[in-house]
Image (tube, rainbow, N blue to C red; front, top):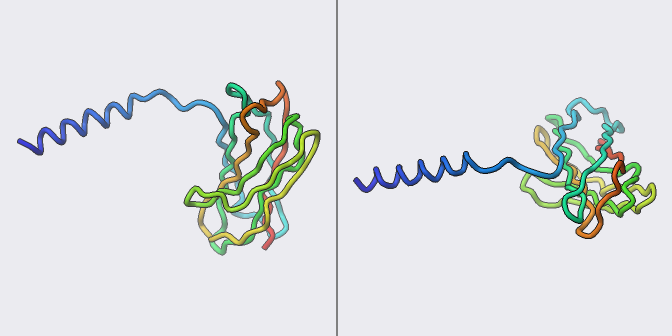
Length: 147
């Protein structure tokens, strides 16, 4: 009897999780870097949106090849009108390295770091609270393989 009540409560809790509202804000994009040659890069462009007084964070996920390699996340051209931050995120969700690109066309690169093979990593871009981007603003970024 006790186990029947526990499984009923768990079923109700699980159904509540399924009925939750949809995710909001930000962009999630996957970049194809599995066959990226040493010295090569994959670029992406974005026109970010705002929520309240900040740019919605954007995430670019990308896989490493089976042999791994050394990589950096880069802001190539910051046209958002705000300082734009870039973070290289590890498989455990921690920030491995980061950099900031000045407003008005600034650029930056995270320090180069060796990464394990057959694993997905992320580059995350954001401004900060009180720093929304202008409508139609854009930036370009890349993931570069160094070795």
